[in-house]
Structure formats: structure tokens, C-alpha cells
Length: 104
Image (cartoon, rainbow, N blue to C red; front, top):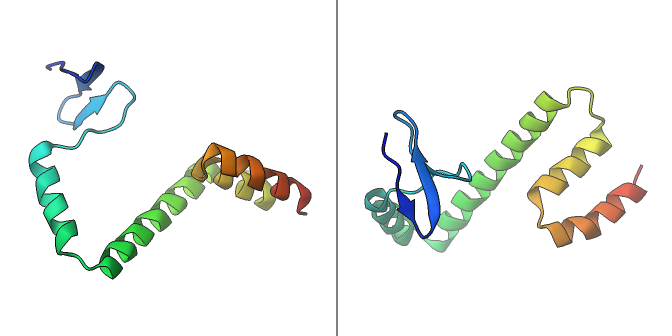
């Protein structure tokens, strides 16, 4: 198992899993990244937007599943608030959170 250093961040590789930053985020392989970029460039604007929307919906579904798994008795209003907290930028959540607190 080799450790690498990149841009001052410690990296680790776990057996057979992708190389990861110390934060736990997977790093993109530069060789496959070029292929991915070329694929995006061949897409129309509409196709890129549809792909982004699909990814966002998957993130929402995974986030919701994680919340329900870790908090099985959570109410609908608490679930909406936690989803917003996890998915929105902090400043926007502060604004939205006030509205969520007022709603039934």
C-alpha cells in the first residue's frame, strides 16, 4: 500500500479501492478524467443538464435514505429540514431554515 502526497494533502490507498484523500473523497484518475471530459464535450447542453439533474436526484435519494436509516422515527418536517441542511449551501440553509421552522 503506497502513500502519496499531492498539493500538500495526505493521500491513502486502501486495498483495491480508489485512491482517496485524507478527507475520504475519491480522487479522479487523470487518464479516465480525460475520457470523461471528452464525453461531456460531445454532449449537447440539454444532455449535460439532464445528466446533472439525474445526478442531483440520485444524491437526494441517497441523502434521504441515509437520514431515514440513521433516524428511523424522523418526522416529515424534520426530514425536510435535514435534507435542506445537507444539500443547500450554509448561507442559503440559514435563510430556508427560518422558513422551515415557521411551517407546520
